[in-house]
Image 1 (tube, one colour):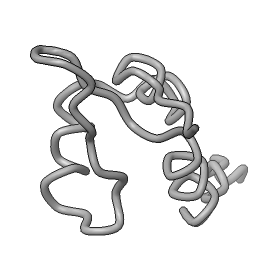
Image 2 (cartoon, one colour):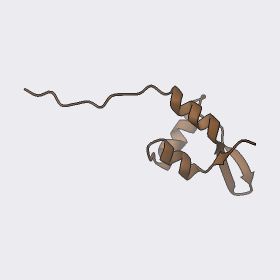
Image 3 (cartoon, one colour):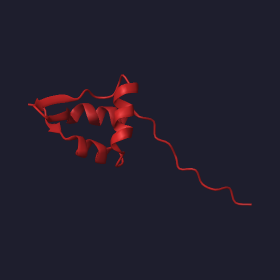
Image 4 (spheres, helix red, strand yellow):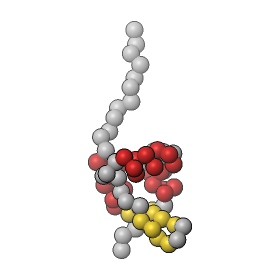
Length: 68
């Protein structure tokens, strides 16, 4: 059986993104994991899909200030 994680856990795994950022990803990125209804008023995401999505994202280096 696949493990489901909550929206709060998903947001934490993605770097503590906000609810609005999560909504933007859900509505604009077709590769973002689909939300699954667990029961009325409760939903979650499949953990393996979330991990695959995070792994597929390009890693960006932090910009370092240029020293003069």
